[in-house]
Image 1 (cartoon, helix red, strand yellow):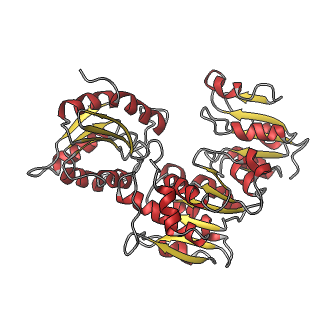
Image 2: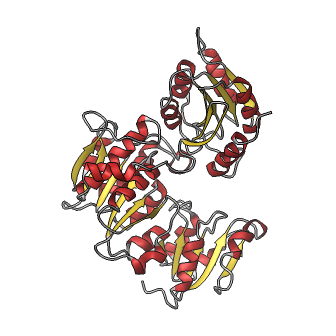
Image 3: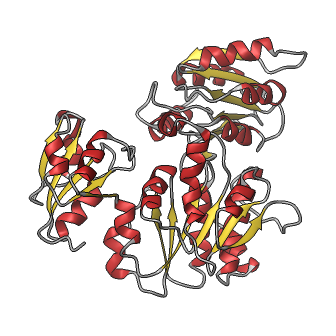
Length: 435
């Protein structure tokens, strides 16, 4: 669709940049843009300010059906489920519904490498981008927090584009019957069931990353993941497996076997595009990781503080715990309840942690579960309530050589806006002077 002169509704501006870039870009294309969001005008002041002077209209504090039915195009935030009643009304009225990421892939002249997975996709995306830049101009964006819409004029057909793709994005890309030229799947575990309702529905969204590939495409799959076979059967592309067994390990600055697995996933894709192991190793030599992903944020009195606030599922919190020596980790866990089983996390904490500090809505249940599973030498658990209280408790217990680890295994939105805010508070608390 040529956008100049078209009436476009951007559904979901967000307070943290969600629809801002899309609205800016659409206005730059000559579209008549209306932004709608359920948040109140007072809550959206900062976001609206970024769109000053662009001639954009706003309907905030709630949606109006006519904004979705009396336009030429709706650009929905991926946070909108495709079955949302306003999007359904748009389709019934013959209005096309799309997303920012779909606007990009439909216009991108270069080959696209798409990275998805329940965990590890941001780190793998960043690692892969560093490797590919050894050979060719490479653009990195998507769910990692960077829109590439404004980069379109700079992207050449021989460049490479690496996109991190969430399940929400892939739901909409599936409607377009689009999959990337190279697909990388890190791992699959239960997540976002509040949106997808069932594990199968979540898996089906993820499968869109390979579902529409062609025989000349490549699917990079985790040989240790139980869902590997389902992805292999769902693609017409050539399948390449990655894993840890019998692979040459990278020397990484970021700790944990899961980061080694991320590096192997990135290299498997990079190798298919002509990158040697030596070039890949050189690309990762100074890679210090991404914020909120086992990020070393402070060291005081021989105690290291790691921010892994991105760990919003139990499997990720266990992987973080296993990145350090047994009985050296004081781990902060808990948060909003995503209705995911926590038994495996509790079992790992009992046997491997030095102590467990429980916060948030799920904190009391985790502490109780650990108490019930207690055995000789088991890690003690404390119901601390909030992060500040947990950090005060951690300081009284930590000794030189210990690790204080924020890796909650739960979502943040019971006490924080998002996992980034939770991680930033941890960073601030960890860097406070010790009395």
